[in-house]
Length: 111
Length: 111
Image (cartoon, each protein chain N blue to C red):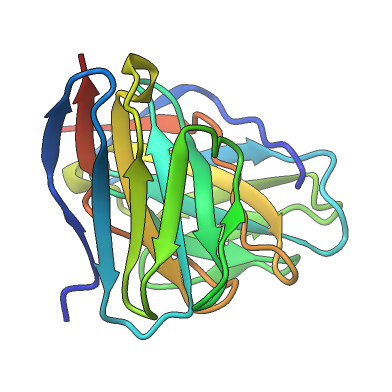
């Protein structure tokens, strides 16, 4: 039982490049989330998926797209990376609105 | 969701109880108090939550004042591994999937 896994762990992009961050959970949770955490800050919600087939914007959705591929997987895409998107990205899952379980994070640097 | 106020940092001697305060003076009647912690740069970890009664689990105790305007997370016998940033969050438990993380309290447990 791995919980929530994220790939890659680290990534460096040049401005304008695109990439997809992958997230998978094996707890059969309905809800999944993407957060970003900037240095010295709390987490901010980018997008969430309350259930398979649905996605909704969080606090800071601009510059990102998401796909809920199936119940297990929720991906985050940066179409044209900008230095302001340098951050640590966390994926989480939960059973409905219960407590959330977080992955280990992806550290992204955009130069 | 109501806003929370936490001290930016606290120290605690190893083996002693760590008492982490949180002010949520604008909390609504249907909002729960949640606590998470983030050890180093890992993903946040759920600790405990409550509505108005005091709660205890294997990790911690949560004491909520009678007027619900503040709460205290108690780690009964702090260890060095409890050094982390602790986040107090208030949220409605039904109808929303969103957490708003503040900047939390950085707890340092001293040997």
